[in-house]
View 1: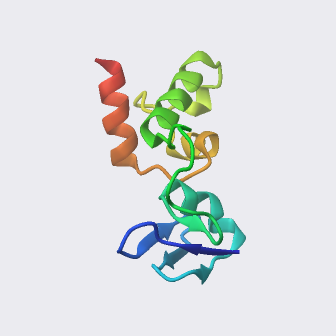
View 2: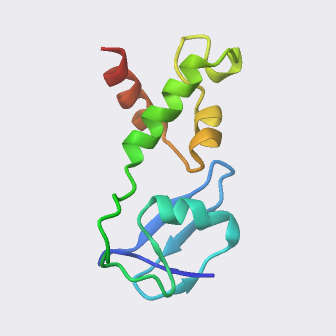
Length: 114
């Protein structure tokens, strides 16, 4: 499937497996394993118009992460958190379906903890 950047800049994608890809302004073929990450970073599949035709709310990355963290807190899986009490990045990424950096997760976690 082809994807394109929704901005005037290339979008760099990185998976937790270490694989990387670049989505350019021009449509480019993207391996299936990058599709979720591309969409999470604002890239558009070929044929999708970037001007919304309805009032559907846009993807709120932070809210998705907050919801996942709340679900982790409500659960009973001790592996969802590190020994220091922070969310386990691997488990968080599994829940949200896209890559979350440690710094992004920590910033949201700190905000939630206040």
